[in-house]
Image (cartoon, rainbow, N blue to C red):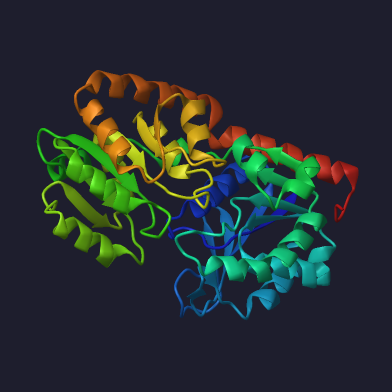
Amino acid sequence: MRILHIGKYYPPYAGGMEIFLRDLLRSLKDGGSEVAGLVHHHLPGPSSSWEEMEGVPIFRVSSLGQILYTPMSPSFPLVFRNIIRSFRPHILHLHLPNPSAFWSLALPEARAVPMVIQWQSDVVPSEIDRRLQPAYRCYRPLEQRMLAQAEKILVASEPYLAHSVPLKPWTSKCAVIPLGVDPERLPWPHADAIQLAEGSWPPGCLRVLAVGRLTYYKGFYVLIRAARRAEGVAVQIVGHGDLRSQLKRAIRQRGLETRVCLGGGLSDEMLQALFATCDVFCLPSLERTEAFGVVLLEAMRYGKPIIASHIPGSGPGWVVQEGECGWLVPPGDVDALAAKMKNLAANPELCRELGQNGCENFKRKFHIQSVARGVTKIYEDILESGGVGGS
């Protein structure tokens, strides 16, 4: 069984969609499927290229950059067509949102192959970045055509499916399969990395870690403001993004340089060491663009309790409750987040207890192998039915 996955980017780009795609491809390969990935280069400039990563062929198409978080790649349809002709996939697995995937509607070679859609998130009409709403009016007709064509649509949580307006006409072909991560990709760090990470935290504080792109919906401003109101709390924010200079200014203006660190991108081992040495992981996201939160699973793998925003109709609250591993606060509520961090600083035993709960539930519910088995069963059902192009 040959499966071609079409994604937006791929590691070393450090996004949740990309991390999940890497772990899923590896697990599908280990389960006996022949898989390949077609993605964009995450930086403008490099020509289209092919490489084998961890035994999986990855084709990266050249990009001119981004407009509204969308890669501009004029050569994508040509590369897409050539890969279909050479790889001869039995199924196309499209990870959305990703406008380049719409070429599957235009290319005859792609229309002849059954499609599975991995619905990572709606294109949310953001109250923060208002440019997205008019752009989505152009995007939606193609999105709906693709959903009509798909054999199956995979959604990561029940709340997201229940509240997704674009998916309402297609719920009969939707299946809920949680995202997962591979714990082998997240080993316990070596002693020297642990020592470096220990030294990066101020002494005597509740250690709060946050990881993600420094972008509009992640809510890192909220975490910085909450840290100012919560004495005895130290925060490290790890990630790259277009809000880096604004966040640094917010830290400086509040006099938090000794308690809030904006770490930028780190090596895998150093990030793992921060997971190992923190007390709590925080995901303060603001909108349904945060559809699931793969990074929450990474925190659970390291046995860390979680404070997450309870975004209506989204996945993070579902993940935390399913893992029974933390606490939920209203999105954007600085006072509620500060109060929760202060309470945890006074109750370290509760942190350890819920972190252990999350670790055990991660093994049962969010291991990538169980996710891959569910996805493989979807593939097998589609091929047994012989269908192409649902309606």
